[in-house]
Length: 268
Ligand SMILES: Cc1cc2nc3c(=O)[nH]c(=O)nc-3n(C[C@H](O)[C@H](O)[C@H](O)COP(=O)(O)O)c2cc1C
Image 1 (cartoon, rainbow, N blue to C red):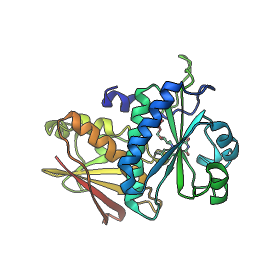
Image 2 (tube, protein in one colour):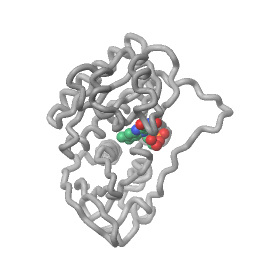
Image 3 (tube, rainbow, N blue to C red):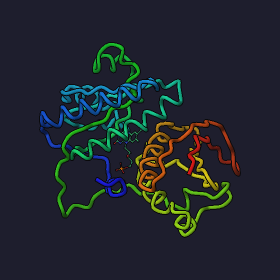
């Protein structure tokens, strides 16, 4: 699916069919994960596919997920990273969204699950030895069909003007300005990226020949959200014929009593 359509229509899947993936889809996921693990190992990231989800769900119910609301799915992907290294956390978001995009192309639904309330003893019990670095799960499976009459829950997104600034954080961008620069679609669609608790902590500052990405530092910053938007930004930029990569900066900055982390720069 085209990346713009995917972003506009993408939603976390929280209800899955009670049936395993077909052997052929399962095999494709194994290949996707092998490929990602090869690329992500330099950032100390590792993903592992768990075929039998029932036990994982039973053991993590009431503990994992927002307020202990564990998501039930036939299979899970566990994500290991190095929380003491910001780069590892950032690229975890980046590579997991790459997996999510590829699974979506196979008709497979996904939902991130936070494991911050799961202690290492329980992790070891569920995922085996040396699993203290498993920090997230991705629930995966075929989505349950939705009733055409049911009101779908919708996660609100902030407006482009609230998220994008010109030259510095004093001046909000206008849609027409972004369109004149050929970046209207990119900033419109990138907003649909997912984030922890749907906080959408991203802010962009557009300069003449580069874009800066900042995260609002509310005291509970999650660097994984930076990697998520970096991935979608790069993919949307490719549609505009720009093939660059984000370069990390990781500096603190402040503006009008608000704290931010300057995550990186992207040449346009
Ligand atoms: C790093 C991360 C962790 C998340 N953890 C959970 C979780 O534990 N439980 C859950 O139901 N959703 C979780 N989510 C899903 C987000 O709440 C969801 O993506 C966001 O609210 C936007 O909604 P949407 O994905 O339907 O567009 C997580 C998302 C991210 C990016």
